[in-house]
Length: 395
Length: 68
Image 1 (cartoon, rainbow over the protein chains, first blue to last red):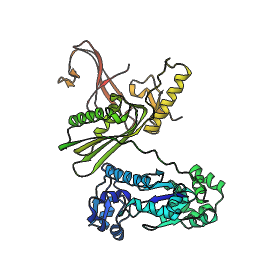
Image 2: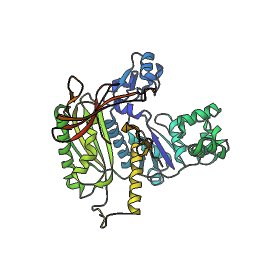
Image 3: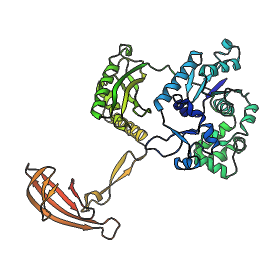
Image 4: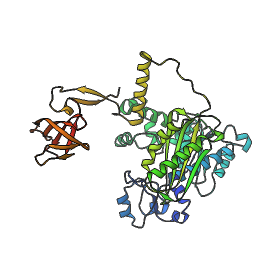
């Protein structure tokens, strides 16, 4: 069986851990500074007052003037989620984390240990801990497990059988469960398709023709098909270095020096054991009580101080507030301890392949339009900026 | 960028202007939403560097121009 454990509104619950008195009041997760002013998850009291997740800030405050906005704490939420995943792993489950508040795991390996599927799932719920209102759904397929967890009540374990039972279970559920773009979902709703079962009843080819590949995937899920594999994660590295400041620091020079010291300390850790850094994170505890986190995956794993600094250093400029604690984490390390260098410098076709790959990666990280070609349009113009155009090169 | 009272450049990027070699005006695209009105100077700086600068009369402000 595949199980899915969900904790609705996880980021809000995590932020409220340090302010439990707010959990019973009308409160909502505030938008991040500089982002669109849309609310995150809301408490039950806020929902009763007419405030909904995703509502515009102004509208929400007009609807419920006593609404308390809870500052986001991404680093705190990450820590809490990591602790929950580790507790699940300690109970014997190989966990695949699908974002904050959602985890998949298979029960096959531990059913005999705990005396059946339900007992194993109860054990998983218990290992999450009190106060999180976790729920678990289990089925033969990942999507059915997610759907079961979405409709289960707090603390409930809901198991869905395979085959027709799974299809019958999915049929009355809303389309919002399916991984569809909002525009596609709206298109379906305008056609009168509002439930998973209604989508499943449509001919697959017609759905694919109208909605493309995403639509076809959603249709397959609605049919009770889809992946039945869970890939348990590899336990993360525990290489962390932090610096506490005696008072909050906003000076960029001081932060850069602190960052350089942290990088040196991290690379000098004996338990790194010569392994290279593949993924690193910079975490800050902010003076106002919130937190900030940026993660970088290195294209080529490295243990060179300058490369680590160059990859993560520019992120310091994005800090939104003075910092009281700065932390650097080696999120992922390589298994290898050496690097194969090229004996002969690439040229000709190999160089072209590398260039194309480099452009592909630039496009993937910076989005469409990141790579352009210079096209000459009026080389005779007296104005140099009118002689050529930058045309996005996306193929 | 600093200019004399007659509008000719005196200092460019902190360097004194030794000589104004040429001056010309470009008025173009006046029929569009983005008309161009520029007063160009080709100058030699005290360091011996040759630069082309212009004053944008539409938006105000000085710019240096690279490219022929």
